[in-house]
Length: 204
Image (cartoon, rainbow, N blue to C red; front, side):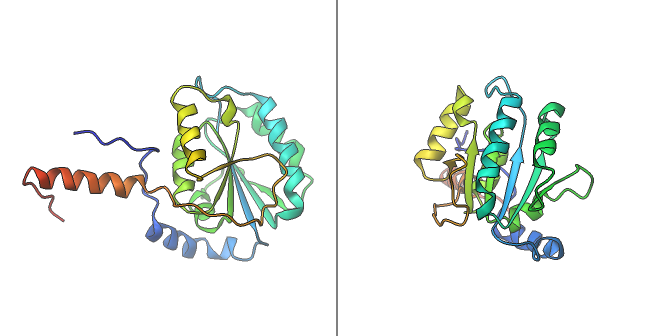
């Protein structure tokens, strides 16, 4: 059998987030709120961009800094050096902004647990699936550059109210809500239901 999900499957749930919140408490609890986490991936054949995205992102971030308490920025292993270098250079002078240096330990789980809102580049379905499962605000940049299944993915996220485009005009303390993405649990339930229909049962 096959189970079709909107996003990618992952291990992030309320239990994992509570554990991460405890583990990263000392680093993140003292930070001024709201804490905005920016996750920058890398271009793909289905989502093409270059330093033009870095310029757009840094300009927009400067536009919302007054409504941010703290900003934490992370790059993925796919982020081109020229994009990371540009972002570091443009944002180095702002004390509210901390850019992870890619040294261990990786703060990703702490970011998921403690962020009040996320800004995510559109290229990573897995990253967007994780942050949309937290129920926190999610803003996407460069969704208009994505095509094929990436474009459909972003269209569905927006239609379901899980994400909003990042424009640089937001008040980052504004309140809105959505039903968190719960693909992993829903897929597991569908598998159990399908097995039960065949008279099978998975052992706990």
